[in-house]
Image (cartoon, rainbow over all chains, first blue to last red; front, side):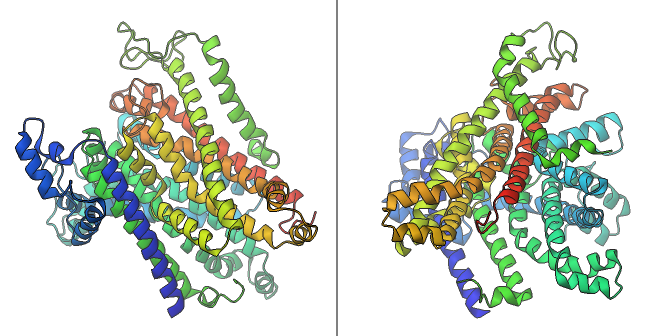
Length: 339
Length: 278
């Protein structure tokens, strides 16, 4: 186990090093002088030159890279060119909203995918299976932001069942902040009406964001389950008199979930990237919308921080998932068949 | 019931879908000779009718004409991304696979660095760095395909290298070039074909996404993602058609590509066993 941990940690650090180099290059390539962008078009040349010196834009490149990494590790991710606020504060303010949405989308994807895959395999080759497969193709193929918009057209504009794209609450009075997740905070404060309101605002964005992961997971679980259903131990279970359904749920499913766990890193990436697109449709005040708004105003400071931050989170997620898989499955811990 | 998905055995459905869209993209401007950029302020946001089968947008531009040019753009960009990803990523993968430990390691570490980003974020970062536009968005999407191509190609080559028929060719005295081009590469073709089909769909989806957040094509350009953005503010006041049709276009393309990848894989799996025993 120790060897697996060491191996994976070293390779994660290496790829993060490469990723930081890449995002540093992006930062350098981005058109425009950061000092000029920050001070605006009316600042004097002297002020710009002074800020350039302070920002270290004229230092040698390797030195700048070191300063960039140092700043990133210290949580100093620069200032927004339009508001002048530190990027890290802006991002942190928006993070709980993204987190709440991401968690709900993830829950939606898992709760949807497991029964869908089970039903598909139980009725393998028949209409229910084909329907589940078609549904997963839909989830993977539909542009999430467009799907969200169409959901809004149907459930808000036409039917009026659910709230429109007005953020996390109807009246923007947040419940007393504990976790930053409005649903949880409202429950903790005992404000039932607020909880219901927050939950109703979550439904459509969560479904939208969860659609691609749902399609992905359904396909993956279905394929895994079909493979495992052919294994001898399932035959043994069936011959002991275990029903088809019970064999599937109790014996095949736990084994099918492990490969799905290793794919959860990819899922995390999907959610992260999806938040960039989905939050804009629903005016969800999250980190993804912050990046998208910045881009529209030609203010790339947030996007630059987001690029490296998402690489760090993505690599960490994959690392955690790999280590978890090793913890659960001894075959990964002791890879005798591999090399 | 559900017979139509029963076409699952042969790729009729995806070929029809993609072929139909490609046909529309090629001969569309002939059968529907309207300028996708021509504005008509007498008919802004007109509902779908005989004159405008998909309605008009806020500037009175015909959505159907824009849809046709959007199909053209999306399909071309998809092909460009796949070709670029295949050449660059596949090339890196093959090079890593046939070369020694040191170069292999160096190349794959570089690929790991690229794979450290979620694909959409990687594509986005290129447009942030090189300037916003359809060209850089295509380049970014291509770059985000490279890691997968490289890894698949490398693992294919590593698997093939130790197979008896390659060893036999080496024993017969064939040169490296001959082994690579006549024996190794043809055997990676099926993997690359399947991967390319699914990456084609990914490319179209990503380009639309980048266009939607304003990092890809810019608004008057008839690109599907930018068209969806264009209709965003009107969709909730009853004018749903501006956004609906380009989104449907993206969806059909991606589903077609994914289905194609799936069914081609299934067909190949049936004809060629994994170990090459026919």
